[in-house]
Image (cartoon, rainbow, N blue to C red; front, side):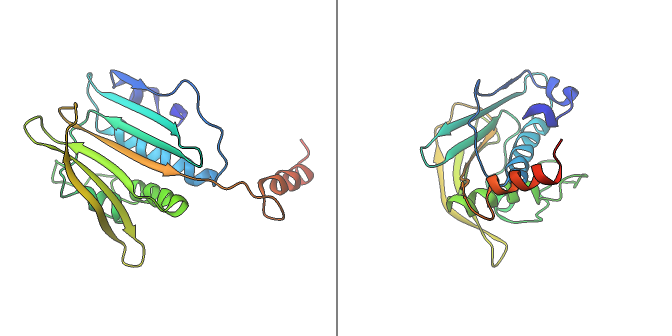
Length: 195
């Protein structure tokens, strides 16, 4: 997955950890790729310092996989979390109070929406901005009719990290047979392009 990022972006972090083995999944590939590119690029962007850590993990939940990306960046102010993860086209500005290029806000919320569409489950976010502040755990969904966040849960939690963000998403893909299946697509592609 890290093939999407420049080596200089990854090398700014002290450590990027990820599973030794990844599950083989079937789903809408460009959406799954979008999820990963957004989650990982945000983690890498906000740990732009020598002691930066990014942890990527996956857990098999039998019917789906639960993915998470965790960093020790500056964290997200709790009042901003629902807007960042539950509103398409939200520009957050984070801590700098200025909008910068590439922060138009569709990526991370759209990535969460893919999980919501495939499993019906919210994005789960844990974040803390400073050691003296409590960490918050939120579950957020997007109300797609209103393009507005809905907070399912917001609680203070014990978290070992002095600052940072952890984002968890559950994704599900369906393997279908028949006219609109992966098998049919591969067969038609092979016929059209036999190389």
